[in-house]
Structures are given as structure tokens and as C-alpha cells.
Length: 619
Image (cartoon, rainbow, N blue to C red):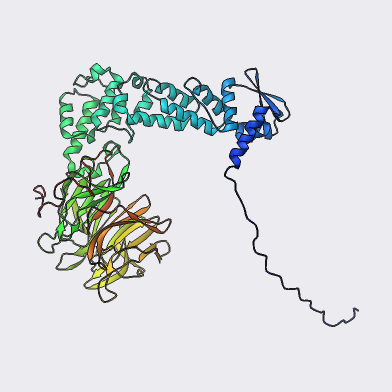
């Protein structure tokens, strides 16, 4: 039996002293890498510490094994991968010329590469075999700097031989950018048919009209004297005709073309394009690759609006390169503000709104804008006038939601079918609302806030098109009206507007974010300034908030703010040409060349706003 020694004494560990302050520092030399290269060159020039001889075309080249292994995967695998070359003093290199190997070794030691037309091909071949991306890139850049109509086929051959997809893409870009001239060169007719078909079908093809594309088809099959004879040859092979977007030709060109054609595939395509033009009202539902613009120029566009008490019927777009607002020439739409706007197959639909030419007046009329031809088309009006409404697109339908007619607040919802040019009522909201905002996300329509009578709301409602019913969701954090709403990256953002929580009307700077998957609201970085009745558009994962009215300042504004959701940050965008509210904003693909795109900060002489009233064609 063990002795009873009593309780075991407890020993206290000495208190740990706090860690000493960090006394270390890290320094980095900006000149070290260049000095190291200089030292390696000195070793090479003095013949010091060479430990391997590369034998190329029977000629020896001394080098440093360690530097070669560090320079590229080819030599790294050879000297650090357990191959027999690890122990060899002489290593034969096959498939590379001696002069090209000397150039590449000089690059490895000095980071400099000298190229000429006489040696670029063999240097490129060596760089591809030795797997040195930088040298490959330099060779491609050199070739592209010298490419022209006479040698482009040879460069295409090199791109295919060495599997250089980037070089082939750059050659395609050269042809696409110079197509009207290139298609008249002998090299064009020597391109493979598949390559020509790909080029003619590209959205990047730089042509002023589809007639130039048709000319390109003819020049591939016929000599210039036949293609330019003023008449289309009777037997045009059909293989490339599908690349010509005949519906984008103007009516006069199509009619003139049809008049000179004999029955056949080409005449059939022209007849189809004429039918497309005749059924102008159905064009949005008859879109295909044949009717799309040859452009990737997506722009924020704003329609109408009000400056002081004067309505506008102009359209303006933000030039993405110049970062300035320009006017779409001859695009005189209706004199309106606060119209609902929706985009369907790159047609902009303007629905209802405020026609305050002679006092407050709600509008039932609707219009459609076609950016391909810069033309307006009036569609069927709403069944009743809607001002201060919101408009959303789901699938092939456009929804006009609630609003007011300045006599009654509305809860009615109308759905437009462009295939039949008709509006019909669908499930109404449970309560009236106007000056609200809406957005589409995951096939559903969400609307938020607004006013009912004189009360500002913070309600959120969701419409389910498949079941034709509305569902009320969690209220937002703040009530507001005359605001904007945008869907981005799976979230809904509620931006701007005003309320009277302070006893008088004030701007709302708080930006609320709703996550439909969790049903939760959060707040993100607030607006830098007030935006009531703003234009809202989403482009490249950024939300553009255009102009509007600041009730804190008591005036309309010209400023533009852009929200980056990934960084939760607001930036200033290019200001509008004047203080304006009630813009109908959206994003459209515009033609590569826009006639008379006036810089609105320095416009040409002439009134920006024409006399009050509607253009004669509005009727």
C-alpha cells in the first residue's frame, strides 16, 4: 500500500514574458536581378565555370547547366529530371539550327533577343521545341509587325505548324479589320473555305454594310472584273452565302438585288430578308444569327428624361472608349420621362411614363427602338395609362407593373407578347403602388418600395410567372420611392430615391441589398450623393446610376455614379451633358460605327430639346 503523502504540491509556472517586439526587417534590391544577369554574362564571356557543351549541327556551344535548367522546362527536364543528360559533358540538341540556338542562349543570359526577317522562322521553331514562351511571344510580335497581304498565308502556316492559337487569332484580327481591301488580294482566294466561312461569319468583321460581305463572297469565287460588274453572277455557290446577314441590308439594296437575281439559293435568301423587313412588328421574336449586329459594343443608353420643366426625346449613350456621352443621331423618340424600359433581343421597349407637356399626364403609348437601324416603331399601347410604373422582362414577355394615372393609384399588371403585339392583364398586386422599382432575377420579377397614397413603402414583392401569382417577402430596411433597382451577381440592389421620414422630403443614400436565397437584407456602401428618379443600368458587373433629382439640393443633377459590387465601392462616372431626371436607361449592343455621334459635353450648334410636342410619325 502506497504511503499517504498528502496533497501533491502545485507548482506555479513562471508567467510567460510578452513576446519581444518584431525587430526584423526585409529588404529587396531592385538591381539584384540585373546584376545577376550581368555576372552570368561575365562568366560566359570569360569562359568561367562552364559545365556542359551543347552540340548543335555538329558545333559545340558551352553553357552553364544550372542556368539552362532554370530558364525553361525543356532544359529543366533534361538536367534536373533524372535523364541521362545529367551526367553527360556533351549533350546533342536535334531539330534546332546552330544560329537559332545561339540567339536563344544569348536571350537566356541577357534577356535580349534580336530578330530579323531572315531568322525569325528558325528562331520561332527553336523556341517552340525548347518551350520558351517569352521567345515565342517575341517572334509572334515580330511577325505581326511585318504581316501584309503578301506574306499572311506564310504566317498562317507557321501558326498552324507550331499550334500557335494566339498568333492565328491575331492574323484573323488583321483580316477582319482590313477585310474590304484584303478580299481583293490574291491571298484571300487562297485561304481555305472553312477559314473564309469563319471570317465572314465573325461579329468582328469590319464592314460598313452586308453588301460588302456579299462582295467578299463573290470575290472568293469570281475574279474582280466579274464580282464588280454591277450584276451578281447567275450561279453563286451557296457554301458561303449563309455568312451574309441579308436582313441587315436596307430595303432598297435588297429590292435592287432581288431584281437582278435568277431563281436559286441567293434569291431565296434575299426573299427571306425582304419578308423579315415586311414583318417589322415581329422582328424581336424572329432574331437569329442572321439578324444580329456585327458588333460587341455594349453601351449604357439613356432615353428621354426631363431637364427643369422641359421634356427630352433624345437618346444618348456612354462611349466605352472615350468615356463620354454621345447622342444617337436622328433617334428622336417620344417626348417623355420616367418611362418603363425593357430590352428584349437587343430591342429597347419604352412603356408608358410621364408625358408632362401640358401638366401631369400618364401615358399608355409604347415604342420600340432598333439600334441596328437607329429607328423607332410604335407598338400596341397599354390597356390603360401607367405613370411611375416599372417594367421587367421574363423570357419572351414584358411586364408593366402598377403605377398611377394621376387619378388613381394602380395595382394592375399587364403583360406584352411581341409575337402578337398585344397586352393582357395578369395577376395584380395585392395593393396599389407607384414610384416603385423592379428587376428580374432567376426568372422572377421583384419590385420594392414606392408609394401608396402619400405613404412611402419598404415592401418587397415577388412575381412567379409560371404560377401567375405574387408573393410578399421581407420588408427592406428603409422606405423610399422614385428610386432604382438592379439585379447583379445573384443579389438585388435598391438604390437612391427619397422619403419624408424627417418630416420633409429628403434623399435616401442608403443602398440595400437583398439575397433571395437567404431572404435577408443587408446594407452596402451608401451612395455618395442623392439620386431620385435616376436611370439605372448594369454593364460588366457594375451598376450605373444616371442623373436624377437631389431633394437635399432641390435640383436635378448631371452626375453619374458607378457601383462595383465585388469591391463594394462607388466611383464617379462621366457626367451627363446636363442636369436631367427620369432617364429610361438600359444596355444595348450598338453598331460599331454610329453616325454623327455628337459629344454631348461639346455639342454641335442647335437645340438639344426641340419644341414641345410629338414628332409627326408618333400620331
